[in-house]
Length: 310
Image 1 (cartoon, rainbow, N blue to C red):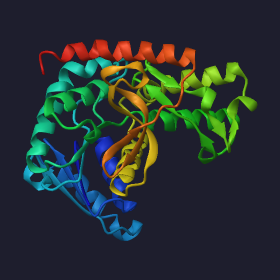
Image 2 (image 1 turned 45 degrees about the horizontal axis):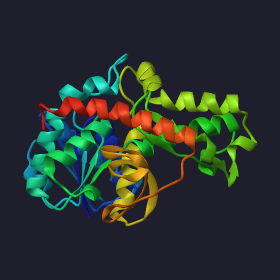
Image 3 (image 1 turned 135 degrees about the horizontal axis):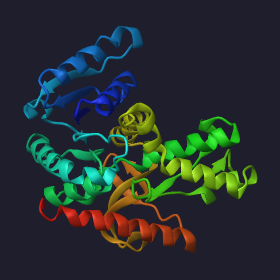
Image 4 (image 1 turned 135 degrees about the vertical axis):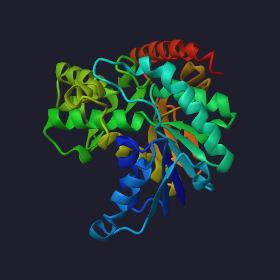
């Protein structure tokens, strides 16, 4: 199975690294427009093969899309990262043109590929990719919910002082600081609701910390985070390539689900070999429905800025 990752920056390279050492794919191609950059990242990772014991074939390419031919999954991380004080929404004008060009190029060489969009603003870039390519909606997936949910579970684990792997939690809605919805009502610790262990005030603090989790790291690092985003992409790719049928919150096109139409936004999905195999209705309560509708309105407003690109 072959995976192409377009954009060899921190997130793309971390994704390639995780896919390689976990043996998720047999071949990975890193592609970047910067001369020698993808080749160098690929070489560096491949020099770990004997010490981390993996056999994945990893190569890099400078803007030569022919090297990506026959990819089963294409991950698009291209675009500029967030800077301190910058929102994901501010990236739209710059990244829209980049993502559209990348999608067109990869499909020329891999017409059957499933596309995973990471570039921000992620929901809008997912919508752009779907509309610009005309692909069926199951083959265009925005990776935001997996990352947001991992941050949610991290903050829950810190509040509970329990292992993160024992915690279940999900974030839906837009992949933005003000649009994501951490579902504290449904979060659990080894099957027991976290509300049995944490007060409402503590849960509200966890939700707030989750929503600004990316911005918090940007402020600390001076750029966007990469370890958790890269690993979250690899987690999603793993479910596709190995047909794992995991339920993962992803940004996908809605056609009536959750009361929304003609929008890509984060909802729980079953992810397998065909990409999005099912959109799961988790029965939101009235308050959660209201938050989701508000989130969808914000994402739809950003999508309006795509008219010049589409």
